[in-house]
Length: 337
Image (cartoon, one colour):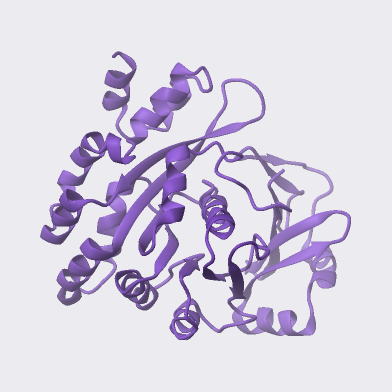
């Protein structure tokens, strides 16, 4: 199970390969859940939960593993969600991601966005890219996360990891601070507001490599999502900055395997080039999709091509691939070639 959900009035619920499976017995109540959660909370964490009514943190159980915890309230009762965190930083190979993504680790500056729905593997992809940079380059890497999920040991790089709520009050505040700490690479586990996004774009534009996540289902829509998050009177300026600062967008989803208890990543990759930059600057986002098919030599990938390749390799069924495609006609044409 990747997740464990404890909520009042039902049994333990587990998420296995993206699907929820409930154990009807025993039924949990608020008192039981509070008793189970109490050993996880230091006095400081307990105070944060009382103040904010929600809490994210990570913890270790020796001999068992690392976990990410979210505590929250619903209908006046405590709810707990636990996620198992891997002990090792993944690699692009172990995640079955395209080899061409490794070239992003050699970028000197720019904004790399990893997008997808919750549970699509965005955090793991970012961790793999940071791990690759760490092995390849003598950089100063600073991550801002809530909470820290993967722990990076210094290899060729020096890696500092800031946890929001423990080491900093907010993503925006932490980002302002680390820009004065001579970073080469910045990872933002999440961009929650326009202040953080604006600072991230500026950092990428002024010589830093910035990696961050967004919640969009394809690479093209990520550009509009960034711009639309700003007030109308700022959007033109953001477009100008994004046209200069964007390095790549990776959209991904995890697709159930045809056989066995596995899931395979399907990805869409938009790499910035002169044409992409011009389209972003002019606000012609609807033309970006054509660049995906024109930019294969530069490492661009369309989601339907990625899904189609999984079908051709026998890794996923056509039915599952179509259910994960927002453009089934394009997928059908690709499979018929």
